[in-house]
Every structure is written in C-alpha cells, then in structure tokens.
Length: 158
Image (cartoon, rainbow, N blue to C red; front, side):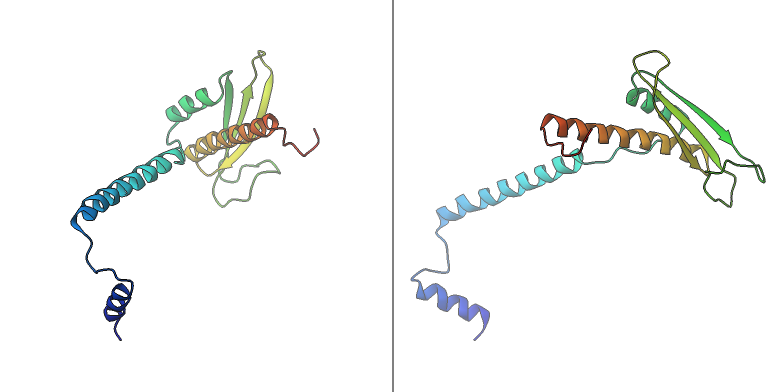
C-alpha cells in the first residue's frame, strides 16, 4: 500500500474528508502567515540582541571605545620591540617583533588605578583590539558579579 493510499484509508476511516471546507482555509492560511512573520521578527530580535560588538580597527576607534568603557579615565603605553631586542621574561615566544601594550583604568579618585593590565601582540592594531576586548570582558564579568550579588546567590567567600 502506498503512503497516499494509507492517508486516504485513515481519512475515510475517521469519517473525514481529504478536503477542508473553504472557510477553514481562510482562517488557517492567515494564521500560518502570521506565525511565519512572528518567527522572523523573533529571530531578527534575538540576532540583534546577541550580536558581539565589532573589534576595533584603528587607534581612533580604540580611543572612543575605551573612553566609553572607562568613564573615569584610562592610560595606555605602547612599547615596540625590534629584531633581537631583549624582551621581558613574561613575554610570549614569537618569531616576529612584539608589541607590548600596558594599560590602566582609573577610579573616581584622581590617580587611583583600578585595573592595570598588559597585552602582547604582533601589531599595534591587534594590541589595541586586545585591550578593548580585555576591558569588555571585565565589564561582562562585573555585570555577572553584580547580578549574582543582587540575587544573593553568591556561594563563594569574599
């Protein structure tokens, strides 16, 4: 027995017909269209909501983004190491000359450093992008800690 024959047999057994009345079609088709539109809108909203911010591509963009991420000020120092130059012991192994970027985030109190970090990279642009990404990661962790402390779900000791 074929699939279509089985479908007809089941439809005739239940006493139904294989055709829906016309008024049901006018109700069902618009409902399907509405559900499809709702699905597309939900997917667009979720995609837009969870989109990662674009990495910085130049020093001006890094300056602007870090200004937003560090409202009380920040400072960065770039050190370029040439071929054969002595590098600090904690520098990563590299076949190309390295770029070291040390950055600090300041607190409301003038001169008080909240965060001091160092990133290594083969280019200045990548070092700036790493600095911004490092700060974005800090902010995400701060938001998680704040949400956990508001919910009183903190299970680790302070």
